[in-house]
Image 1 (cartoon, rainbow, N blue to C red):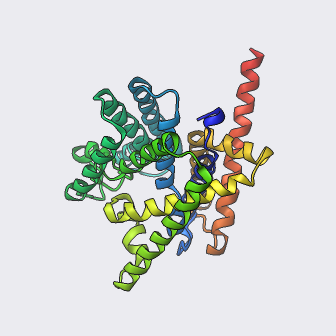
Image 2 (image 1 turned 90 degrees about the vertical axis):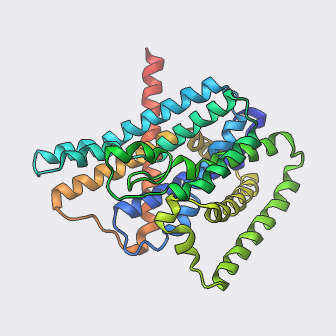
Image 3 (image 1 turned 120 degrees about the horizontal axis):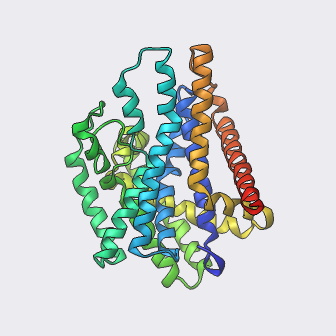
Amino acid sequence: MSGAQRRYELDLAKALAIVAMIITHTGEEFSFEPYVGRPWFHLVAAPLFMFSMGVTMRYTSHNTAEDFARRGVHLIFLGYVLNFFRSTIWLIFGKLFWDREPWGILESFATLDILHFAGLAFLTVALLRKLRCPEYGMLLISLVMLAFAPMLDTHMEDMRIANYFQGFLWRAHGEACFPLMNWFVFPCLGISFGKLLKWHVREYDRFYSILLPSAAVMLLAAIFVLRGCGIDVFSYVFAIDKYYSMNLASVSMHLLAILTIVALCFFAMKAIDGGFRDAIVYISRNLNNIYITQWLLIESFYTIWLIATMHSFRVPVALAVPVGLAVSAASVLIYRAIDLYLLKRYKGE
């Protein structure tokens, strides 16, 4: 997405998504109890991240099936590289001092996280494009997958060879965080939304002026209806098992939230210019690298602290958001420093 085609609201949405993910990961690793902010940050984290990825698929000039297939393989490879450096290497190191199960070390390397899902989503879109499936056809296929996913959900806490590969497709074990059948709908929704923006919207101010109140009112109405039926919205939609095992109801709630956020980002970006806008675009363009950096930063700090003190690193709940924001800023700055260093070396050569 570049030049006159660039949709800056999506840049801001992706930046918000990565910050929300970092706050969530910080809370998970640094033991906020109870982690009160988590449901709201989940709302603007992975689903928004995947939806935005879908929009980018529609806007990118590198959009052939072969381009998407190469991108998919690259992302899955990055997922395993990240697994090794954020956890496996520490477990191997720890085995020198404590007795660890060999399977636990292998399991840490085989965790299926969002990079694996993103890669598999690119490969699936590549296959569907090769079969000449239109964008709305992909969305229909993703909805059919979503409908069948709960029937296949076996979700055992332990990951074993027998159910490892199933975890790519549905929630087969505790280390399968983003199964394709439950989550493919988000990039497909993004692709369809991107097609709408690119080919059918002429007046963006009018479009988002209608979208913002419509999506927000429907989201609030859904929340009130669920509450009126005696259903706890957070446990129904955002509980961790339901979050990874998405169903039609939870996807609908997340979609309304995503559309509300993207519309808000459109109006926010109208007031943002100069260096701040450049920073948002930089984060958006380097989302995967910042994602990898924050995990390495969080896990390295946590593991070194654990080895040194033999205690978990605990932060008061009141500091959950500030600490998460600090980790976000540190991740961006660290990656930026690495990026500048590599660029300088490349130019020097």
